[in-house]
Amino acid sequence: MRYALLALITVLAGCRSLGYYAHVTHGQAALLAQRRSIDKVVVDPKTPEKTRQRLVLAQEARRFASKQLDLPDNRSYTLYVQLDRPWVAWNVFATPELSVSAVTHCFPIAGCVAYRGFFRKDLADREAVRERSLGHDVALGEVPAYSTLGWFADPILSSMMRWDDDELVGTIFHELAHQKIYVKDDSSFNESYASFVEQEGVREWRQARQLPPPDEKGDALDHAFTSQVLALRDRLKAIYAQPWTDDVKRVAKAEEFEDFRGRYLAWRAGEAGGDHRYDRWMARPLNNASLLPFGLYDTWTASFATLFEQSGRAWPVFFAKVSALAKLPPDERTGQLQALKH
Image 1 (spheres, rainbow, N blue to C red):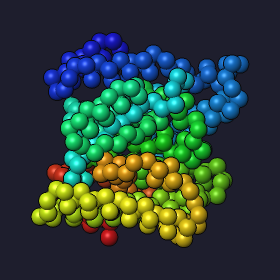
Image 2 (image 1 turned 45 degrees about the horizontal axis):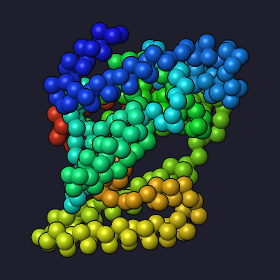
Image 3 (image 1 turned 180 degrees about the vertical axis):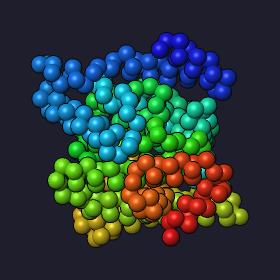
Image 4 (image 1 turned 90 degrees about the vertical axis):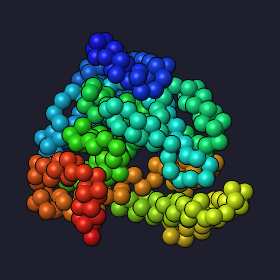
């Protein structure tokens, strides 16, 4: 393992600062070193009962993923790490002050992504300060789980234990889907595909356990809220494209965010039925960067749902079709996804 990590540092060091890659490599190595077999954790008398029950559920979901959903059968999510912090990592998102386009960061394996991840909060805060000094809008996001795309055996993390059953099970399906198929430089494709596998996988999981279908209310609220955020992003994009001075654009930008807060309160009191689940996010400072994560996870989920039906709801056939899409040139792939969406 040590040699693999050293080789990875050598490859990455030529792309960005050695200091950053030393940090993420050390953080990943620390996680790998802390892994314990879930089989051993669940029989350990020192393991809290609630944790034991959650890990037993994770074991069952892990077996279901490979046997019923045709997802990779490997050591990922058969191991557990008890973190010494509430989140495994923090992502720093940034955009120019008058743009909704992300400041991207490119990596040899994952391709270009709209954030930089850190295993230490203080380093994430330092990066946020650096980005702000460049005049960028910045947002910080907590990371409870992530995938190494099959390079290592990803563990269940203690930061995942606070989730409800469907979210825990669904995340295992989601991250294993990334291991099966991943396209560099196409986050919308990757996340929409994995989100569909998660949603359909949870539906089949609940059906196999003779549980009622997942509650669609939460998904409907998420979709409605995301639609509002994306509409805000479109309005901001239109403002930034105007032939106005930067000062005028800044005023219009501030007015849009203030108007959005009012729209949210009206929506929460009306359509959302008083649901407060988004209040924590709304209480944060809002800027261009805070809007970046929205839309990635559901842009093409309807397209993948259609593809699944066209595959006779057979997972091996579906994955073969997704793999074929993944190999297409970006424009052709987007065109086919668009056609499937209608």
